[in-house]
Length: 81
Length: 149
Image 1 (tube, one colour):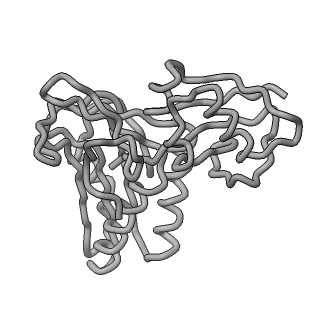
Image 2: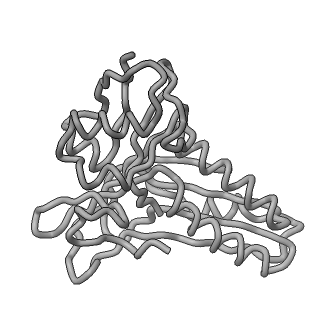
């Protein structure tokens, strides 16, 4: 399945785009997506372990199954305030 | 009440919105763009967010704060885009019958915002370089802002 991943801040900077498409096996979880992201954007290796991911605007864990039509986002450590 | 805005935050309005006849205490917290971080000089800050999730998380924090403390009003406004030094990046105003709840809720809210709300700032240093601030991320050779709690 093809997943459209939204990127922000340093992740967006590293990828040079605010979204990327990732090809994942059906039923893949966020952990697998994390791996696919670093394969496609090698600049993020060393950082990707510290990033969170969100599905439909809610924090997900590595075990969360990626839903093909969900709004999936990479959330680097936040720095608002 | 929560709001994300690209415009300058009207702090008088935030304070006014937090007042209530039942409130004996109103606490206002302002976060502002600071000139010096770790010995380096900041020219400006740029904030971006994941809008749908930032609004959702801020609303959840308001609900959670209202569940923990008996608040009359709870107003959170976060600025986005480019901020010059001294400009307000976040305003939190909470009111309660007595001061304890308002102080505690205000402190808790800013701490939680810095932990869970998907908003990011970029340091635009005076030397012309720029750097996203991500507390705890190894690639940050220079950390910006306050250390994560």
